[in-house]
Image (cartoon, rainbow, N blue to C red; front, side, top):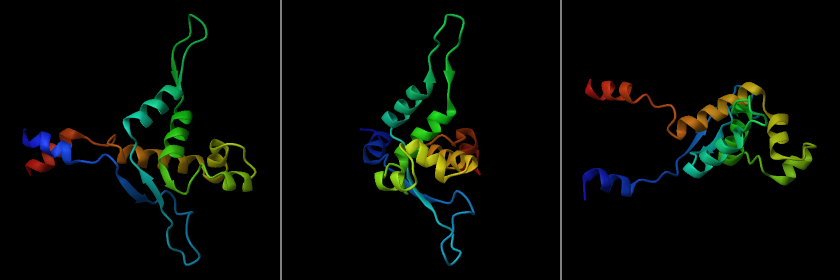
Length: 137
């Protein structure tokens, strides 16, 4: 077995991180509150991608990708804390769905930032050529 194969076999794709999304989230002492996120699995990614793909209803229409749906899905499924699926919190805020709860509690820029952090943790922020150049130096 190759060294790379051994390495891959020992790796876990379950990665978590605590991330700051906005200066708006602070505790009573003024300390920044962070979201606990996890990396997307391939199945999570594919499910969100498929749900966000809008197929044409007419012949002359094109396939569309709805980034709002995609961001909502990856946030709801990959944020550990707070839990956007928590039924009690959803009800307390007067919402009916996790998506409504997400939109009631976060600003649009915060939603975008959180989705970007999850994507980055899932490997979508890597510029491989840049990393190779850094490793060479």
